[in-house]
Length: 389
Image: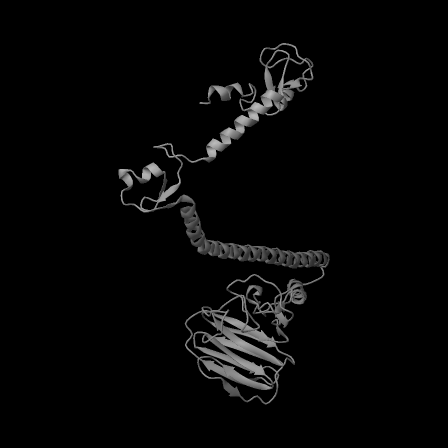
């Protein structure tokens, strides 16, 4: 509880030591701000204690103000001095054995016989130094955690942007299909009584094939090296200046200017055609799902490489094999027979085999493209036939 002298120096409104005290004609004193707060928006100014009318301009009590400032200064000085709870002496020493501050009386007491002591300021400096040394590795860990959080936030935002972009593409494509079908429905209904049933269905599908395309391999932008950019429909890739992208583990970096297909294969037979054109350097093949993409690939890749006019088969840890190709292909077909363990490459210009890998595949394989120019996965042709009954 507060001492009597402190109670005498307390404002009856805020119950704290007076700040800028003023005195009314009734002799009651208040903090200037407390009194103004009580009188705010009141037509009649009355004392908050005795309710007597008072002047709207109370006098400042300099004597009371000086007493309050002296009391606060003395109180702060007393609180800043740490005293021993047993002997009411200043804590000037630090017991190294008990790891606690003590006074000179404690030092000579039975509790601290044969103990080691240091001046409390010296001990405080040493503890502060030890604490700082302990905090350093924690600060480094915190810095690492913050960086991971930044990377995760960037990756999450990038995924959201990709999702919105893909959603827009899907909606636009279906909107285009719906519009085509609605227009075709109107035309077909108008001609319904003039056309035979078979010709009606054939013409619709025959026209739709010009609107619909199917590409067997869609590229995955989350795997593309920052030095590559994909087309809007995710079927072609070309080199460009490196950009800032989320540092996700699926992405190639440093060793390869590569990108993977979005779908992997762990069974069956699959084929896709790639236009390599006049590129001076390209690589086509497949990559195992477990391969680490942010370091030099030592195994799990089967590909053919064209570099500086030379062709080679690449499947580490085996050494590269030089390939003899009579004519530079512009279009290459990649055929994967996962169950039989065969990966073949053909020149579509001449329909000749370039090379075949034979291997017992055990995990999912993803189509791989590496280029320093521009490479495009070709869509399959859609044909419509009428089955004769």
